[in-house]
Image (cartoon, rainbow, N blue to C red):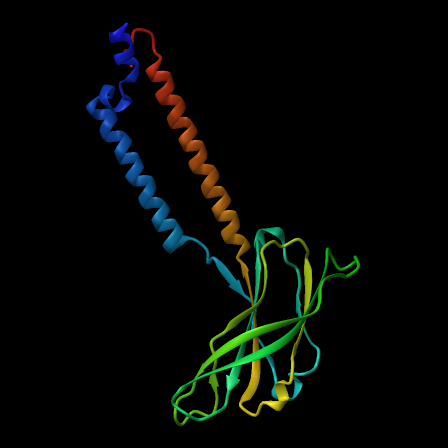
Length: 218
């Protein structure tokens, strides 16, 4: 009885041949190296950024509509980022708060109705700006204004208003950036996971069949 329990508790690595041991670790390092090369060098870009939109100083307090169209679920998520030009000439770090009003509407396709996701929500953001002597305008650090963790619609409209933006003489133009996950990267990620899942299944099945061959001690 003790000998049977001892055999049952033995690890497969102990019963593997030298060739099998070398092949197992060789395959592991080959696939690991392939994943690093494909992911870091040959793979598609993770983030796709739309061309930035500039909102000029005199229009900061208007309802500026930023459209984003033809998205699919493979884009995964969306980030709306804003940046402000700071035109105060000094070499020190400056910090100030700004209030934004943001409205988000979306629709499934160009034939469906627009759905309100967020209406005139006021958002407080803190900007950190670095000005250098001799530069007329310097950009502040970009801040996130909205983050959609799931793409459930094809088209989005973002309406942005900077509250009292024209009353601050130190604020110049505003830059708006839209970032989404590259759909090609999502496909690459899905196929990559599926391939390694199938390889793992084949390896486990092969090990299981070899371990339960008649007359073979585990």
